[in-house]
Image (cartoon, rainbow, N blue to C red):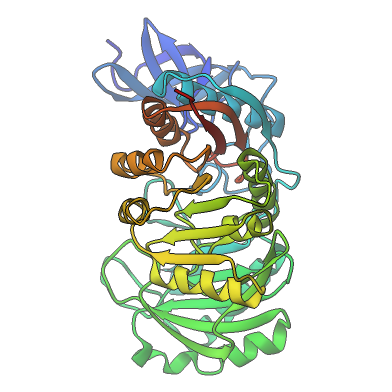
Length: 453
């Protein structure tokens, strides 16, 4: 068995879903971050487990031809990107393999795997950023958390964010340091400013600034920040405060106070006007989300006569993008504010054949089945944990012709599609979609059809 601090020669032959390279030494798997397939390294063992080990690069013996020089000065320190040492072509191959492996290994199913849909823009694609704030050497700074920690890596020029985000964040930090506004400390639980949260409409250009603070009542020193921001950045249409006084990892609290402009900003998604509040779910990569929804629409095979059930609908973006091709849309979402956003989004776009229900997906599926709803197509876009077995059972009981799974977690998607296979559905096609270039995340869309008995 390998020992801690031992130095071995290791060839990297694969990449895990977490982004670590993996090689084998005497049949023992050794995981090494920031490596590429084809690297041959001197590897220092840093952690020994029962059947595998973790190592770090001690020295390169042979550098893989798939490797490129990282183009970010905090790559490897910041916990955001995992694949800046790959070419993008190699990243897409790795992500395609993630999805195919999950369906074959976990789901024991083998649909037609269409080629992964890569992102046309691999930098500055995010419409949202959440910067943790900290105090370093008596100065308020912000940046991003180091991997698996809450240690803030000071950095504002992230290549994944639009350049204007960096300008706004630097302006806020200057304001805070001039006014001696304190950063929140998780250790002492003291300080005012916890996070700087920015949203931007990709197509509208409208920007919302949200400052997450420990208490509305202690914001006297922030007086004037909204007006100064609006004066210097014409794209800012809303400045809000969010109160989060809890000792928690959750970024946003429940209370919101608008201190400049409107309570919301707007954007356009698939031709539909969307209203966004600080708490609204909205796909982070707008342009790629539109392409993702286009695939879902293609797989849904809508003709204009169908009833479409959109489970886990959020603010209604997927269903509303298809509403012109259905007779009726039913959206289900558990978060009340998101349901209200969905209703307003439908109303503001003159859409009257949509119904939105605030309920858990499982409860709603049961309720809709019992009231006699028989949707022709169901779209399910669950959170990372996937669907419950009961939700899948009621989906199948409603006997739609097609089920389209949209998932941010290919492992749970494979599990759920395997369960639907037992309930009478066949996975016909699957396409991976890269929504978050340079990260390990990859989404997928699956078309399932009912097996005629």
